[in-house]
Image 1 (cartoon, rainbow, N blue to C red):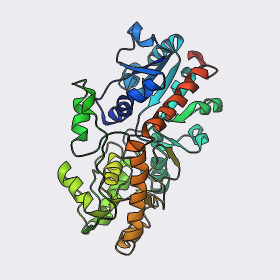
Image 2: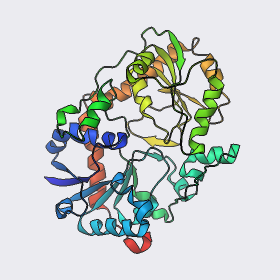
Image 3: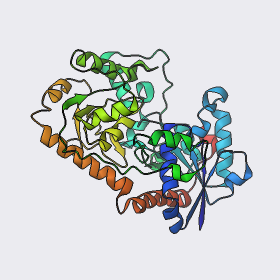
Length: 373
């Protein structure tokens, strides 16, 4: 039995919950595969590194980068890496905001979603997001607090990048987020329930499209796309947020759900809409690799251009294209259902987890702190 310790902040954030959720619900399948996982919260506790491999959730150190600086944090990560093979799990929202300063210190850098072309990580992007860079270059959008560019310097480190699992492997039913948040205070595993209630995509729906979203973000390059969409839809459809029950009920009666990028390409609404059987209208996501992948343009989602030049035209075709759009929603549901509750769901997750573990154990080794600084 291999012992894998998960260093984590727990179920305190949506991303953290989605990271831990499948580890809990598939714990038995992992054990059957000879993998004993346990959760730890204190990097300084010697028991944390008493394991065959240490998987570190990135949020464990998120508050320290700005207050202590890279050097001190990297020293602590390097120290852990001297005691156990380390895989770093970046659970941030987007394909961007990589933490390349960590790469020399870990065997594997796993992220919920990555750029398909890994070489792009060696180029600076405004706002550390590929679409933020697009709006900065194409439309002159700037952030008040500009992010320091983070780029991969050594191309050899690109081989350490791999896709883990995205935020879809969690419970986005009506009460799912509440139960997952409660798990932080009550360590009772039965609070985590895999959603099984999918509204059939081909049910009759009265609302052509909806676009419920927030538009106030700390970064203008993030909010820009949403603000432009809200302006385009002004007078055609309210875009203000609803309470959770009303929000889900509306989506069950909606054919097309507009879901722009937020801090990341993937939003929780994407999975909620898929449970509700609505077709997703997303910005083009062909640059992204993720798992499970419900974001295949023309197959599971409808995609619009980043410059928004075709979004109204797409929305105006909802009635004429309702059947083909429902087919896409059904295909997205099939992909999502398979990852959540399909007959191979546990096996598929264990296989992905095992591949990350094997790479962590069999990697030639981390480079050490000197190169990181």
